[in-house]
Image 1 (cartoon, rainbow, N blue to C red):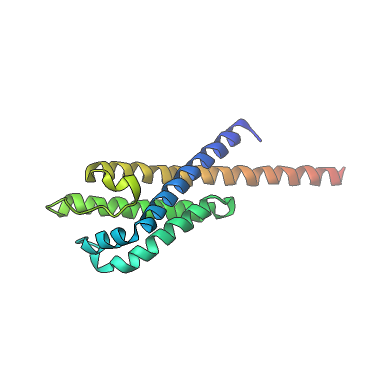
Image 2: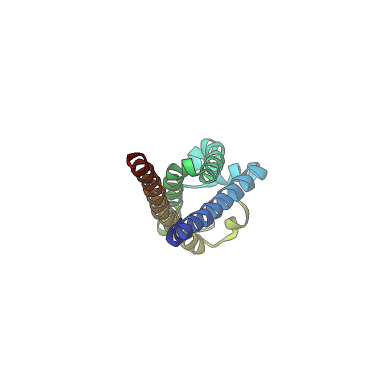
Length: 163
């Protein structure tokens, strides 16, 4: 394996670890304090009417994405799901900041993230969305390097059989 492919694999593993920890932390924080999470969702002016399905589905989706990120075979799907979920979260925060006059809406994220200001939340989500784009790009490079390595191995075997 070349230095570039080692570096790409290391970056991909670090990003997958970051997203896995983030999604597992927020999911289990929501589940640990499920009553507060569900109450905050129902008070939300944008998604309050979907409070119950979101309170059940969102932690499940976050855990599923984290699990997929831990296995290379599920990486492609996991990176796209990470990107889309972070894009939705970022868009939601942008709507809060743009259209909701009173920003005293409780954040229903889990753990310490819920205590961020809405502006800091937007920056955090935007940066994390960009990291997901980076994960998609690096995963594509790693997949390309792995398939070209396999192809080289097949060519070596083919050449040995011919000689």
